[in-house]
Image 1 (cartoon, helix red, strand yellow):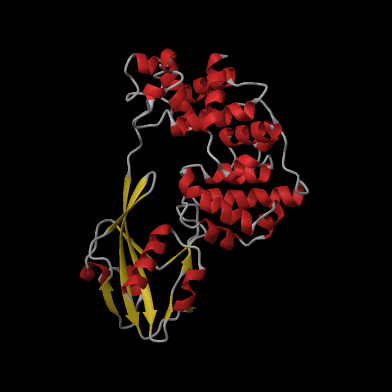
Image 2 (spheres, helix red, strand yellow):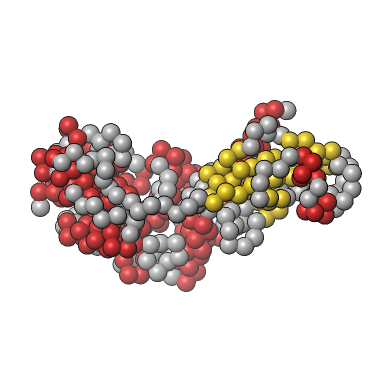
Length: 347
């Protein structure tokens, strides 16, 4: 019990003042947990406040247009989180009469909710003793117990879940889960952990054997794919442009973009104009110029996008039906949002 008691004692003295810590409302806990996946608290906090202000209940979120939800999410990345959040909000509002499921087994059935999120909601809101395991928890447990099983392996995922479950304080599971997550985020940090002032240092294997830099262990990442994007930023004589929704199951589904010509290498102006895609898109006379002098490398988890924005000026275009002053209304990837900001600054 020393481990859990020590962590909870540390937490009660060091926990962060966060708005979702002041509620047991599962809707708000759910929002915060989904937003903080792959996102630092410092970045996610403003989004959480914005979301809870615009969508104060699950019914408000369920009734919103997906495009509006994605626009509010813009900049957080991993947009499938927002789409799944919206989808599950509709299920809760329309099929469950606004009543959030109260057990781990029922919560995990909701789209976009996995073991970690279901455990967090079940323990914090409904006092169910089910342990959370996220990056912070993997780090704390692997270092404290000296475990070298890769945390992203099937064996490791199972092993750490069983260990975390055996350690949870069944009387206050929500507090324990938040304690171990905060401890990993603030004290047992990935780089430069605060070992000299650690309340667990006298029994930590990694500290004793000087393994804090080696643990936790991850299996080799998959190969990063390179993609080359050329966005055609159309400007007509009457100040219209083309903006289109991305379809399919790839990145940025449901977000909007300028017409895209993807190539297998970086293209110069002559190469671009000579492609069939460009000729089909712009059969009439155009003036084209490269906006960014150096290609922008946008890094996603499994792919790097080498991106160029081309300003294409033409008298008219049959698909250019969006007034340029309305461009900010559309939810776009952060890559395009940054371009629009740079373009506005350059004016």
